[in-house]
Image 1 (cartoon, one colour):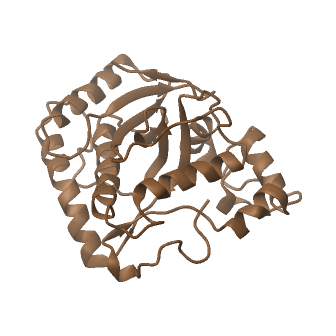
Image 2 (cartoon, helix red, strand yellow):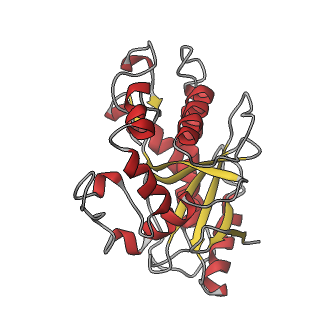
Length: 274
């Protein structure tokens, strides 16, 4: 859910370079736990098709999720499978993760700093794949937390998404931007420190009935690990390309841990790609 209403922070927008918070106010959350939006929670947990609230034709009633036939049949299916996974070793906190920046100049500076080592790394990668990227986006597909308290910045890739060789670099970009938020906002006022934000998001997700068996003690210092979740069924050759790019990134000064690669089944089960 996107944050609505006033921020829980006492700081003004000018007091930060990069910010991320998808908690909602207690009043708004009540609509989903004991109000008119309770059916949406059930749909999100039990619907066979992927559901995004901003793609619904109608909030309640007979409306069907718009986008099921397009976005929902590709990347959205994989996102939905991961979000609805019942394993208690990790829980998804957010989809389409988009940090905010103080202004456009600040955004450009941070993106350039995060992107530069990744572009250099993929330029030198000995991989025969098309569309070698010159830039990377900042909207992370999924944000998760695992039982070790690590944040996982997840790049989701369906099989029909074209070249998958470069996706480790994209995941590293997401993680680098979020790690910058954690570093820069560590001195935020009480109520808005990154650890408090993540703990609050996890608490609200559990209030909605998601990940009821998941418990974790978040570390004082959060670490963001880049993750690729590839839809199961890719050829060995394509996975080898991803592994080669991942290895090329190890020596890049990204400020984040090495990229972890997984295959994901339609039920959300993750299998590590060595």
